[in-house]
Length: 109
Length: 116
Image (cartoon, rainbow over all chains, first blue to last red; front, side, top):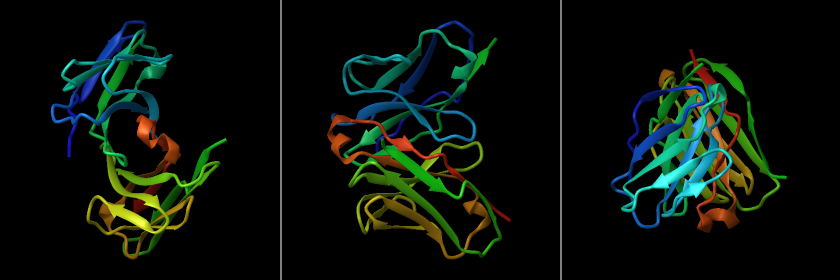
């Protein structure tokens, strides 16, 4: 199964942009790249997803490398409420969503 | 609207006792259903997924089992709990008609299980 690799933790100052990287060198051509985030004692919530092209929504932007072996989640202006564990995951085939250990983002006031 | 319900929210069980966690989805039909577990300070581990009634795929051999007796009902069970079964259990679903578009997976609120 393809897997993802993320840094264990990152810090950012409030109101500054944050770039969260993810490596997925074994990704296949049909695997979608999804990002979720999880607040303490809650289920993960959807952030953004993409296949080949860069994607933007109200929460974040997703930049996908041309070879699709890595991607970056971009939070344009971090707030204290963005402090969470961010998961980069691959949807493998039609049914399986495999989560890695994620990146714990700390936002400094 | 589509919602997912998971219960109980919290439970404390002695080692060797049985377990039953239940999850139901409303407002949709024939969803894909999932059980994940998260040990303290760890990532999410996929335990089981189901693409239809009575169809269960197990990802990790362990002390747990899953069943799908109805289209929108997914149950996680154990006959005898171990200390290592403690964790945060999450039920999740994907709409059947969204599978081809890479759509999102939706999670319930989770169940905290402490085995003592």
